[in-house]
Length: 325
Image (tube, rainbow, N blue to C red; front, side):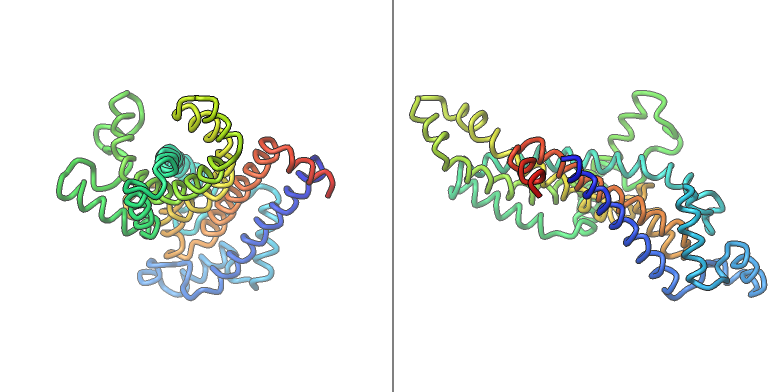
């Protein structure tokens, strides 16, 4: 188990390094200048001095080696556009993204589990067919499009939720009171639903298939033959053994939530990593873009690694195979 974990960690580090390398070269080779929109107001001489100050006038290979050296010492660089350390900008954005992702993950798993179990119990009946088609519709929707629809219906037409932002900037600039916590949850509802509903549609399909497979097993038929109530058979005997796919879905949810958050945070003006990354890309803020890719890939790899570990804990057969190999 230890050797397997070491191999997985080494592979995870290699993947993160590959993502950082690809992002570094792509953003530097893309058209545009790190002076961004300011280049129209700045003279070419000023822009050249700024490029020299941040080391952007050196050969790309030299910049890459210099970046890796700084990264090995925990230095993510200085933001060209924000005029502050990249680590500080990420420290402000990451908690907001994790809050959004956590709320969306809760909606995804709770709603997806409930729908999957219901569809399996009512397999091939009217309710299963309707929910299956509705779920397929939501699963096919781009997250930004669903977000715009929710904004149009519940913010613009019905005015039940705010049009964007994380909180009321005047009444609740910080989470200092219970009212401000409720205000943050109010602003969080639509972005979390946008990500959570799309994810729940896919989760329900996975859970329905897992439940149908388990409910055909001999021990489930034996439980029914003993005269146990159907609710106990479904929730205790079948559901408990059909939860293993949830561990896999947990690992797959991280890439979905992080990539979806890029667009959802932009649509809802949510100040997280996604919005920070999009702004940095347009401004050619190389250190912020590369650091965002580093953090995002690290989260994705960590989520998949955690899913593998949980799978090995939940299923002893995997531990045996890993020890053999």
